[in-house]
Length: 257
Length: 216
Image (cartoon, rainbow over all chains, first blue to last red; front, side, top):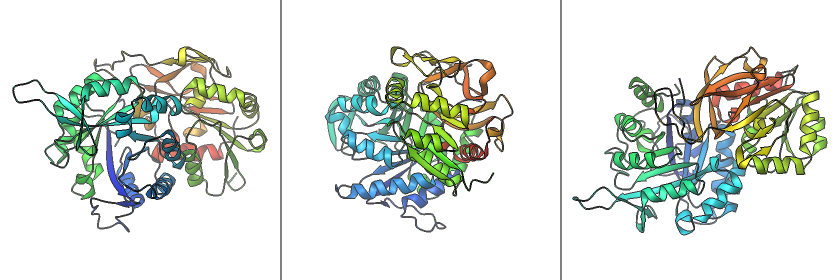
């Protein structure tokens, strides 16, 4: 018995509403992130990740209010990412009840922001989100580049080296998304996951591409991830989180059941 | 005693998220009065005191001392039930290795040590630091704070430093590359390295137990 691997359902939220569709037939309001989070909590989710995709500045108050409601009803760790640019954004989210915040573009624009954030609030609440895309040609060794803006904007930076740098700047955890796999349901990019997991001493959350329960097992066993993040397989109630945990536990992975 | 008249003070020394702990207490004890406070008088008047903490120990200790909470915590422990959480538990010890060595409150014997950069489990697998996630807590003693919680139940941890305490005050242990103190108990004090406010049903049960615990 030791530390359990984690399953983290992810909610995309725009102006306080869940987007990309959640299809539980038996919850009151499947568009309400709090209702959805409560469902995942009751199914045994180990944490919740809340990705705020609200573009407008005014929408931030709605986001903070939603985080506050969620933290009053769901007593597992809550990570909030999206639009975190300055220290004041982090303070507002933590005060609203988030336990960790995800930093993505702001880290690329100003790496010292991560250092300042970890120094002020502690590494334990700073998650650096890395969106990576494979860029080598077929006859080359695998190489991944760091992208921003949902995978549209290349940075010229090597994703593995970036993960190492972010760890050294104080990131307490890495949320690693393969832009090649995101939305494909073909499974995680296991080579990428393994490369990052071996390169950093902090926990790595694998993300992007989950289509079935074996993919979750592969992310942990082959990819070396400490946690797996998924959205659609849980949103559409194809699998419950409890089922996923039992499947993984049956294959020898330490889980909280 | 019911929770009707219980006043719980959560000590706020400016080090992060106390909303979660307050909300969790309001959830398990809807009739209790929960105050997040940095006012020594409110701490003195409360029936129960929660001493939380997140972030780096150097900054925590600096704020604790600057605000005079070292005396407030000492006094509270001598009078009524006190629950230390995470860095709040670490701050009660003699000294921490974090930030190149920081003197702590020295209320309990023992030190706070780093897990190390080369941590492995019994099968030789490398373990990541921070220790982050759900791990099993083995109850080392019978204690009212463990009531209704299964032996070896999982709680949520997030920390890179652990408490190395005298065995006679260890109430629960955990294992992450090495055994360490997950909970301490001594008279009016119960302290936990994990986050009960983030540990779902078991964590809420522990907080509920704290509301009705009478201390020594």
